[in-house]
Amino acid sequence: MSELRSMMDGAVQSFEPTSEWFGSVLRRVRRRHRRRRVTAGVVGLLVAVGGLAGVGLAFRAGPSVTEQRRQELATLERSIHRLSEGRASLQGQLVRLDRNVFRLNGLIASLENEARKTNDPRRAAQLEATLSASRTQVELMNAQIAHVEAQLLSLDQQLRLLERRRDAIQRLLEGSPSPAPS
Image (cartoon, rainbow, N blue to C red; front, side, top):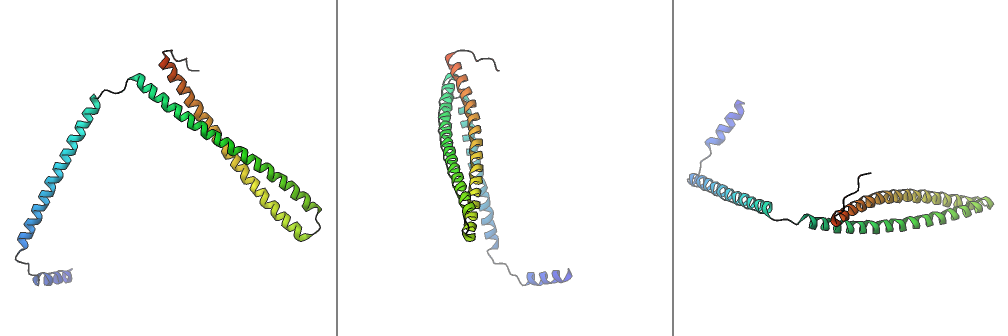
């Protein structure tokens, strides 16, 4: 520790400050105070604008309940339409996957038949490799089918919920009471 102190004392003794050091310190102090005043002014202005905007929003007349229901009904109709389109797309995908699995199963059956009939060991090995790859492909497609079916179930649940909500809003707009929950 004493070595460090003696090194520091030696370094400080050889240091000679410039004649303008006090002026540069004062300039930095003024700059810092100016920056703080500007920052305080900007923050105050933002708080005032935010407060005025909040008061304006609080006292602004919003849409009527009927208009809100109509807007919600239009949003629900759009959502139902998009989900229905998504459902149709998933059903098309499911049909294509089923068709491909059917074709692959037919190919597998014909390959198995050919493998039983062949006497050539090289051809039998080739057929077995093709059969293995085809069976793997069928397994992958079956997994995709299960995934698409799960998506369809989820989509159907979402559609039912949206349709129930849409029907309830339509009844409210028509002035009829909502049915008792079942």
